[in-house]
Length: 333
Image (cartoon, rainbow, N blue to C red; front, side, top):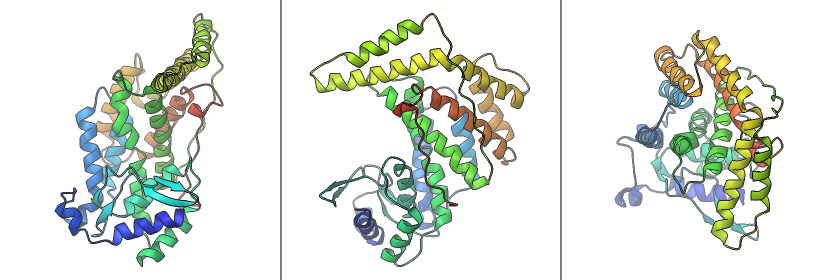
């Protein structure tokens, strides 16, 4: 199935772009700008939707501005949200989720795919890239793929950060939270690999026995045992159960984790913020004011990684699927 998917990508990537242009599909003004089209599109969406402060994204967007992937004039139709397919009896039936497709750098389809390997074992990516090179008649551009991959790890936070801080009534908050926290970890891991720096680990705090603990446990048990016939109601109930486990986890270890975040900021900023909101604001301001030349890239990557690890711990109880982290294949292995 992977080989059949590669064949489909090769057909798409070597096809004449004229029919797509005539159909009005998005295209960069110049072929040499094709690598930036999806990045500029996502950045624009983030700016329009942004609420509050997002120091991690501001740090990474600053880094990407200094390290833009280069297409060297490559241009083809791309699916962008790659690695998604339907299959039956061991063969592909359809390539799906192409609503973000455009005319861009074909290397973006080889990059976005990597994150999905964490939950679907597609295989050894160097071998996948070698096979793709055979199909299109030229080797892949690993440097461009790595930079596209770093940017792609930001896509959930770019798309859903506003829906986490101010969730609409019908949003799936638990899924947005898990997606963002997991892929934010991918971002700091990918950047650390690119910068060749070692990332720290952090200790899991001891669970605090709070007055609200019994009520949270009761709420989680109640939501886990409710039975309803309506499919949509079951879906909403599952989301409520996951959020209940998140807030229960926050009650158990959240204060220690937030204090650790504030301690890290005290060390960086020279003052300890009064709380997480002020901390996010001051950190974002510090990043924008002090890291325009990238001199603090390593320090900030480590700081954000620790913050990401703590956020992941709050997704749910230890050992749950919501709190589990599955690393992506390394570019250096």
